[in-house]
Length: 490
Image (cartoon, rainbow, N blue to C red; front, side, top):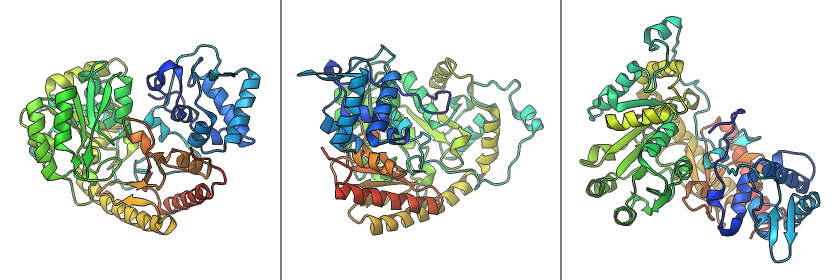
C-alpha cells in the first residue's frame, strides 16, 4: 500500500513479534531500514535518530523489548559500541528503559503497530545505486505509439470507469490466451494495476484468516506480504533444482489442506531457474487429486532466455482451477501498471467486488497504451531476452573477478542474479553495502521464515555503467566485511 509520498507504508509488525512482546534483530533492522542515510553525524547519532522516528511512527511499538545489543550490532552491520552509544542516548531521553533482568523496553505513546513490507524493503527511493528492484528502467525500447483525445473517446469506455478493464483490452487478452491453446472468454479476464494487484485480489477472494497458502520455500517476496496481510499462514513447499518436489507437495496438500497454491511460470524470482517440463507433468495429477486452487504467476514467463516454457500447469491440470496472472511490467515497462488475470468468470466477479472497495478500475490511458503494445509484445520480449542475457553474462563475469568466493547461479532468464555468500546471513552485509552506496535485497525477504539466509538478490537490468559501479561497490563492502573493520558478526 502506498503512502502519500510514493513509499510503501508497512503492515502489522506484531504478527512477526516474538511471544511476550520481544522484537528480533531482523524486526528492528527492517523498521529502521535506511537509517544510515537519513541523518547527519556519527553512526551512533544517526542510529539513535532512526530509532526515535521508528518509535514515533509506531514501527517499534510501546512496550516491545529489544534484542541484545550484540544481535542488533550484527543485524545492523555496525560495532557493538555504536549500538551501545545510540541506546544510551535514547535511554537518556526516556525513549528506552532498561531494567536489570528485564532487558531494554520501548517507552512511547501508544501508536498503531506497523512494520515493513518485504516488497517495500527494496522498492523505496534509496540513495545511491539500486540493484534490488527488477523492472525495466524506462520505455525507450517501445515501438512508436501515440494516443490522442479521439482514441480516448473511441476506446475509453465512456466515462472511463471500468472495474474489470476496457472491453477492447480484455477481448485482446482473451484472444491471446485462446491463440496459445486456452479457449478464453472476455468474462474470464480481469485487467489489474499490475500482476501484484492480481495476486492480492485472488488471494483475498480465496483465503480467510488462518487458512494455509502453499508456496515454494523461496519465492516472490510480495506474495508473503499478501499472505501476512490476510493473516493467513504461508506454508513452504521444499524444492530442488527442478522446482517444487512432488512428494513434498503431496505431503503439504494432505496435511495442511491449503486454500491456495502459488507458483511461478517463468524464470523464477529470485533463483532464476526455469520450470522443468517433466516436473510440471508430475505436479499436475497431484493438484488434480487435491483440487487446491492454483495461482500461476506468468509475469516473467516471456523472459526465459530459451523461450517461454510450455506446457504450463494451466495447460496440464484437468480438474483443479489454475488461474493465470500476466503483466506488461517486465517486458514493456513497470510504470505502465497493467496486469491481468485469467480465471473462471465467478472468481473474476468476486475479485471485481473486492477491488471496488478501494479501486474503481485501471487507468484508461495505460490500458490503451497496453492495447497498442500487445501486437508488439513478442518482439519486445525477444529483444528484452537478448539484452538481459548479455547483461547477466557480463555481470557474472564481473562478479567472478571482483568476488570469486561468491557462488552465483546462472539464471535461465530474467534480470536477477541469486548469489550465495560464504556467510550464514547476508543481512548485515546488505546493511553495510547500503552505506557504500549500493542497495541489494537479502535472501531472507524471499523466504517464509525470515531467518538467516546467505543469499542476496542482484538485478542487472540497468545501464551497464550503473551495474558495473554497483558491483564494484559491493566488492568494496565485502572487503570491509572481511577486514572486520566496521562489522561485528553475531
